[in-house]
Length: 167
Image (cartoon, rainbow, N blue to C red; front, side, top):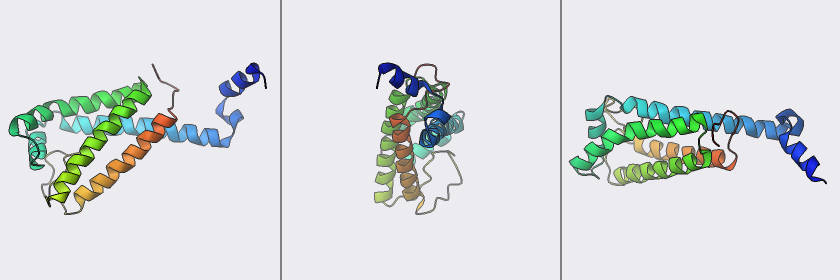
C-alpha cells in the first residue's frame, strides 16, 4: 500500500471510511461537548454562591475553613475554564487528563465523606441545595464520577478534533 493510499483513506469523509468510524466520531463529539457542558454548567452554578460553596466544602470535614474558602473561590472559575478548553478544542488530551485528575480528587473526597457516614449534599451541580441529602447520594455521585472518567478516557483515546482550535 502506498503512502498516498494511506493519506487518502485517513482524510476521507467519515461515510467513506465506514460505519464504525462514523459512530465513533459521533460518540467522541458527544463526549467532548457533553463534558464541556457539564464542566461549564457545574462552574456556573458556583459563581455568585461563594458562601454556599464554602459550606458544601466544609461539610466534607476535610479542609480547614481557610482552605474551604479558598477552594470555594477558585473551583467555579476553574471548572468553567476546563469546560471552555473542551468546547473550543484546545489541547483536548491534556484537558481530558486534567478532567480525570479533578474527577479522581472529587471521588476521593466523596468516598471519604461516604466512608465516615456523612449524609451531605455533594454540592456538585447545586451548591447549597436542599440540604436534605439522601444516604446513597454520595455513592451515586461516586459512580457518576467513575462514569465521567470513562467518558473522558474515551474522549482522550479518540478526540473529536473537528471544530477544535488547537487539538
